[in-house]
Image (tube, rainbow, N blue to C red; front, side, top):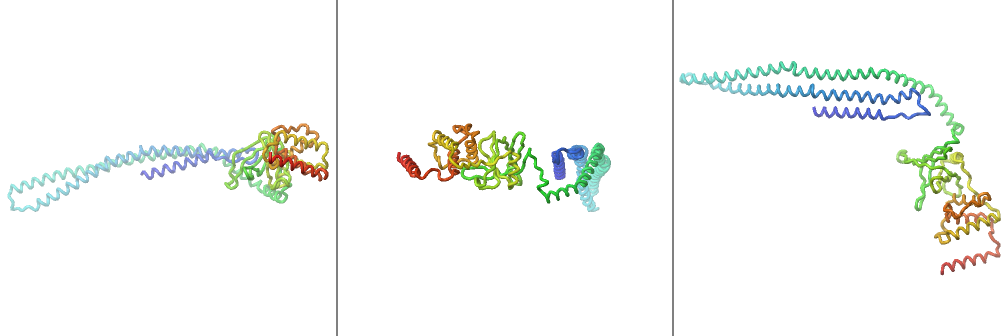
Length: 436
């Protein structure tokens, strides 16, 4: 009984978990909006869950009532009636054995015994026989009572249990009647969805073949929105890694959203990160080892984010969506007035802000920042607005801009007659710094 009860509990738990799973399951919407048929089909799982839960509640009540109407009455009948009949049987067997033994002993008496002795023996046998007769009657009475009580003490609980079972089935019947209207609507929705699928399947297959044959003609690109996978450079102490992200860009608020995507863990995604786009610049091929790269700057976060697209075409689409620009090429044919002023301005900033900074010549700045500084400083329209005292421009960015600008100048940078004097001055100042 206990084992059957445990199995019933396991079955009930499994049914309830199944109903809970159905209730929590959600269909994904394909397209911009759901049709009436799709809404009906999506709702069906919650309806199924409700029916299963309701039926299981009624079944649980039926099983709980079975203890009161069936198990306990039968248990009471067994203890009070059948156990009493067994005790009467034991008593009858004991008295039967005793009577038979006394009778055999009595029959073995010799007729030559004295009359008084024989008369006493007859009286003793009559007494034992009378007691055996009474015990026999009690046993027969108890057996008959048990047989009679079976007609109602055993059958009546079974009738009550079946009545509860019929109530459970009737409850299911009423549920089925109430569910019938929704079942009809659901059947129609399922058939409509199947017919719609069959009718559009050939069209979808035809479109798929055309897209395979001419992928560029059927590629849908929105100028307002761009989305796809990008590898984002993450800089650490000594190395940099490229991490795959799923990125989206909306032109109207200029909002970029990045979600970490781990392919090794079965496509597990991380937390969403977003920022407002400030600028987008293509990376020159000789400025980075990776291909298809571009830099973006954010309004609400510091630094430059370097991203790698999946192809040259993919990078072009991202840059078009973000209004990206080409990197500045500082190619000055001669050291003109603007160039002199820029170099003097850069050197003055280094002397006043970072002449004592460690690694002044060795440490290089971020290439995109260097290009941006040169672009602003060499442009007559924006050169006056460049504030080198601002923390926006690091010393390493300014020194790298000087070196890059000098490398772009045509050789020689100075006439030969000044070369020895320049080297001598640099050497003397360097030696004096070492021994000062």
